Image 1 (cartoon, one colour):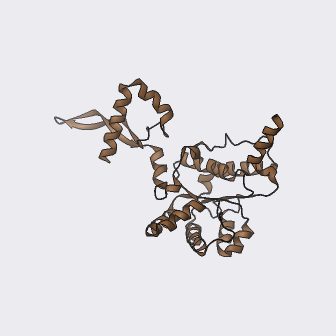
Image 2 (cartoon, one colour):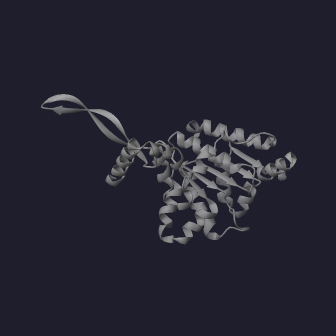
Image 3 (cartoon, rainbow, N blue to C red):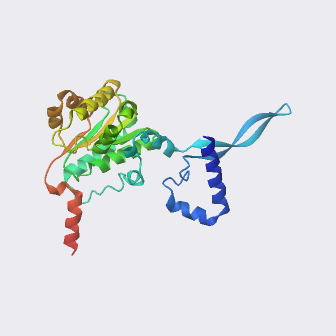
Length: 275
């Protein structure tokens, strides 16, 4: 902690001493507020006794930046780092122009969920899942939800299914700690659940049930994106699929259709139209 405080002081003094340094921060840091120090000093006044007389004394106090609270959640997993790209996924930059009605419905559902999270977070139906075609915007919308929640000081852990399980299996000595973090974090975002294999491994099924069942019993919200439907999840493990269905009952959208749902292909089509 002392090393971090000294580093922060050095950065602040360097920034004040050099105009070039302050210009650089505009493009070099992921968090402009704390310059990636995960906190900063603020001026406060505290009452102290000076020769027996109560006196307000100006002092520097270290304050953790909100980016530190968010980064701390992801540190157990390298794959869960909250990147600059993650932070840029917002409702405001989700393109709705010429998108099918089901995509617009997913957008509205995600927005309503984020806006009402504090009222529903302790209920049984406190979660959201966006299911269906690749390229339909599932991850963007749920990242937008996650960013809204983090702005409300809600701790969110991002767990990309394939990379996350690969990381767990690569170091089983940390498995218990990692599974516990997935179980207990305020909100868990599982991205591309069941991705990567035609049939999930027994290891994935067992650990996924341990995570989901714990969160189900403790009424801890989950955000899930997946190309599989609830029925397909139940075919993998009915107890697990039915729990997800109940938790996401009020906020479940299935985006099924043709390639018109895939924004990546749509962007390419628009480019051809302009040629």
